[in-house]
Length: 194
Image (cartoon, rainbow, N blue to C red; front, top):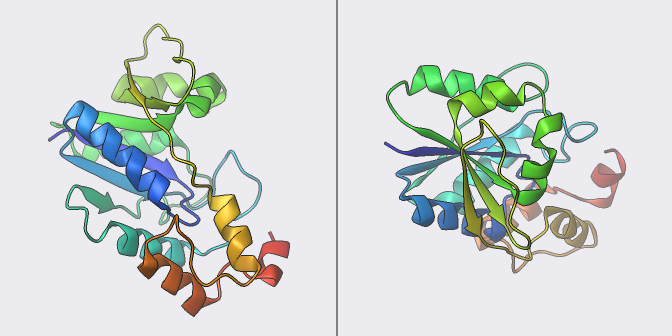
């Protein structure tokens, strides 16, 4: 199987995430995209506003109709920050006979040299870089596939909308909006605490 790993905070997962994952799936003929919500992002200060359990449930709700999408709690169940190379090495051990891909945006591709142990990550995966503007530069020793794509959705804008009393959002599956309202996520007080 051709498996792509798609890591992120997913706080919350929105239609843009699903759209970009689908573009990657179709462009490279992927069998599966594994969505890996991180427990603690090394690129962001502090914990995400929503708990790991809430983010897992929102992923399940958002991806319920996508037979190619899998929600994987690997990074949520390990201690400390989520370093991509550690996740990928664990996935290589889990799927030793399957080619692995890593989905990322053009901004993260540009920042990749500053990630922890990027060479170890590059040794295990082929990168699928989803870029909206200029084509990303190739890098010696890194296998990269360019996929053109974009989506206007923003998790920050969605959280702000719910903090101001919204009960739904056009960038979310209705079931995800319902979960956010039911759980009282992203309310003014919880956003101030982050």
